[in-house]
Length: 171
Image 1 (cartoon, rainbow, N blue to C red):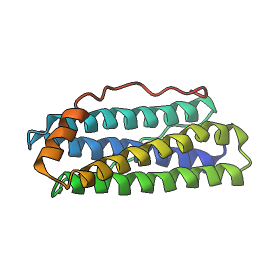
Image 2 (image 1 turned 90 degrees about the horizontal axis):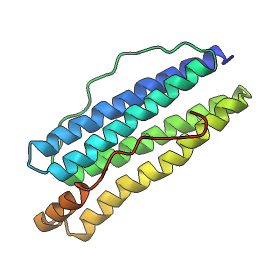
Image 3 (image 1 turned 180 degrees about the horizontal axis):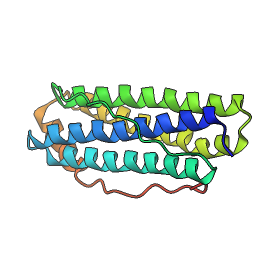
Image 4 (image 1 turned 60 degrees about the horizontal axis):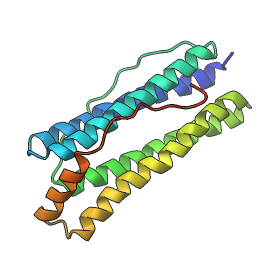
């Protein structure tokens, strides 16, 4: 059985992961409205991954005898100025999520909840990849000099991203 404190923290993260999906869908819509369908695809795939993360957390809560709660999700930012602005907001968001995951891990450590620590390790590792991907977009756009040609090339490259469902041993 999971502690009430840990259950509450995990349910809050379920909400946060669904917010992330919502946020990335707002970015996909922004790119679609600018005929940058490759980036729209990239962010749609990102949103799917975030929904997977929320579902993984919810399933874990249920597996350890907790109750899954569905909390209100706030509206995401939709005011983007440029592809670089989107990428920078993506990195800032992923850094914030990393902090949330670290807080969850700290909570599991405080509770001496070893099974939740083991479960959360997948998310700790995932956040390394999430920040790396966001930073990579920023760095590539900087290398291109933030040029229109660079944006179009990156958009074309982003179109090839495909959705791969998240898997983990603890799920």
